[in-house]
Image (cartoon, rainbow, N blue to C red):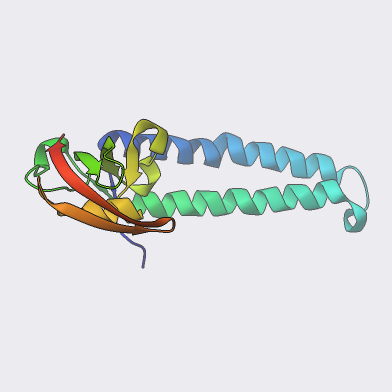
Length: 157
């Protein structure tokens, strides 16, 4: 059984659009590539055919993964978020106690994570470490690069 995937309404819409595109034009492109490769002769020694079939397998795996993510998606509405503690979709201002750098992160689902725009996954080490913390509390986060201490400065939407 898969894990519940918390997403915003916009994210779910994007996922559904991507799935539709993969199922329609994506599958059509792969079918064309397989047909072209098949026309080139002996399938036992046809590298193009093998590559097209492998691309088809990867494509179908992506479709299955996206379908699973959509099935397990739960929409979170911003007005339902409790900002008294860190939760999914909240924006958290934290100070790294080691270097005194202040950063703002938004806790989002794995699908929406984008570190460049300050969106970190709820399942990432920092995301897990910050969840449930309140303003003033220190979160100790163990990441692959070491242990960090973050002080929660502010929580907003």
